[in-house]
Structures are given as structure tokens and as C-alpha cells.
Image (cartoon, rainbow, N blue to C red):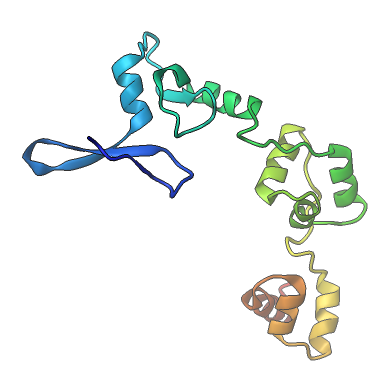
Amino acid sequence: MMTQRDNKGGKGYMLVTLNKPYGEKKDYRVHRLVAMAFIPNPENKQEINHLDGNTKNNLVENLEWCTHTENIQHAIETGLIKTFKGDIDEIIRLNQCEGYTGIQIADLMHTKETTLRGFIRKHGVGLKRVSRYGIDLNVLKEQFALGMTNKELAMKYHCSSNLIARRRYQMKRGMI
């Protein structure tokens, strides 16, 4: 009897190890072995979908061959992949009127910045370019004059002290 194990500590696909000739061993995903052995694939599709979304349920009845697009679409339809449903008008208002950065808007909307940017791109809208960390250089110059350290400013703006040091250097040299 073969022993199955999860490839991600309870959150992944079930694996088995098979021996190859000359003692070499290789891991195989159970759902792929089941599909290759028992499910015809006349269209030569490359992925296998778990119909119930449970990667531990590798019964033949729960598997189907599919394309990558079909697999993703199924995951969205069944809620396995959460899609961002933001209000594009609100995002534009926060960026254009309030001056929020992409990171700040993403935080407000409880999503990742990359997810937000993909959503915006899908709607054909661009964000107004604001400093990634929302740093107003005139205010930064005043804070330098007050003697604030790079570390203090980095904590205030949620960025690296190296970034603040670069800005300080650039201001001294008249580069910005």
C-alpha cells in the first residue's frame, strides 16, 4: 500500500512516491495519476479540475481534464478564488482628490496593491502618480531641518531608512 501525503501541510495536493528503475524515486500528484489512468482526454487538456474544489478528494467522479482558463474560471465561480469587487469611482476619488497612494487605497479596501492595480488596469484607468510612500518632499525637507533622524522618518512613512537617506542625499545635492 502506498502512503499519501500532502505537499503543503494540509492545504495542498496529495502526493505519492513511486520507485523508478535503479532505485530512483519520484513524487506524483495523486489526482494526476487517477486522471491519466481512468479519465479519457481526447482534447489533450493539460490540467485536472477537482469539481468539488477539495484537493483531497481524488475520486474519478470528482475529477475532469480542463484548460488552465477553465480551471481558473471554475475556481472563481465556486468561490475558491476571491475576486476584488471595488468601486472604481471611489478608487479614483481617493487617488485624484484625496491624494492617496495605491498602497494606501489597497489598505483601505483590504486588498493587495497588485490586486488593486490589476482591477484598475482592467477598467482602463490609471492612478495619479503619487510618491509610493506618500512622502511630500517639501514636508520631508522641513523635517530634515528639524533634525529628525532617518529612522524616525522611515517609521513615520512606513519605508526603509535607506530610502530616507537617499532622499536626504538627493536634496543636499540639489537633485530633487
